[in-house]
Length: 612
Image (cartoon, rainbow, N blue to C red):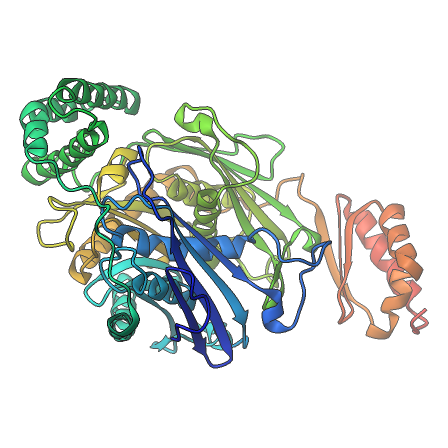
């Protein structure tokens, strides 16, 4: 870590170097706090500059433009562990920016981006409570590897990014190849040991060059306000939680009580509406925890480990290759699977080179799914993140390209939402793949776990209450969102976010075991509808043939300006024809006879040899 030479006008700036990889990160904040907001206005941007590997952008104007999907995912990785550790009440517009300036191509930059941004924030005057750092963990030949190389990751059955303080874990993002819960716990512990060392280094850096933290603009607690809110509203909040109605009824009651407490107490505490609402929210959190702790029931009447009712319909869309409607309580997703040839692969331009993804999942969360109106169009950051999590959950169960040469696209359209639509996308996506006849290895399901704490200001303790299949209300008022996906034997993906100062490993182990039980229940429900992939592909799926020619003859098949390949596609009514550099040809179309005739034509065309 270096500071003091570059970016001296930012509140904090750091240049982080590892080998020949260099990142530059800054933290900046507005001079004055924003009025009339009740959240921390933090924004994060990250850019992998093509110049870092001696390239230029493929865009028309040759300028690095808006963030690509993988950069958005890195922004989320930076944001998630840092936001909960900024002092409560901080209302200055705060921005974290980071750039990859030089890249040696050896390892992922994601943990570096988190750590560099955290270091720049720590040495600034923004009141970050503790230093934060991140590490990547791989699992090769039953051994954990810290910050593995990209080459090592090709043989790793785990890709884990963990972030935290020296005391506890704050964020986990990972994908695995059906690994058991015990291995996951050991991996997090292994990564956290490295984080402790980094946090000590960042703390030392702050002691030398850090600015004095600015607590002067944090609003002080208003004497007697929380006590008045508790006195006025405790019985009413308890009665609301005992309603155990649907989302609409409980939301309406919660809003009505919010208006009531403001109207009642504002004459006593003038111009303090935001503070009154904050105290009301604090009461909601504490009473939700107390109810769960003392009675073992939740605000919708369920037991702590109970999963909501599940309804499933497979094959509901007649012309789609594979489809499923997955409903869990008031969360619902329509998932579809589409199969195509290699031309359907998703192409991503990255500093590591052009990546062609054979499988990708796209998640859409329209405002109508929560009964609202709003912007519709390009996916937001949340949609990108949720889609990526569901995609990583399903990836390990897919057959290899050699076994099943199709490119696969899964879409998840959220039609209702009240908690964990990303995990509904995993369940619906798995069912849609099976409905399409994709020979997946095993069905995969996902579940979201929550945690309720009496005191959101500390680290999770033995009083923490773990709840299965969280509601949107429990997500908003609780302190943990822990999503876990996998089959009966192991985990394929997991994501942890925390709103307190950290999660102990003991609490995490408890949550993982409760998640396993819930996952098994969901898989039982899924298998009642579809327990194996369909034996045949739908008639609407293009047929495919793969064959090879001599590399010297590729020019003959393509023809001048692509004339010959276009003629073959047109004459034999092909969907697509893809010629690889090694002479492998993939052709697809709806008629098996015309595919066979096209293959014969190409073989006859190149029979004489030569490049043409």
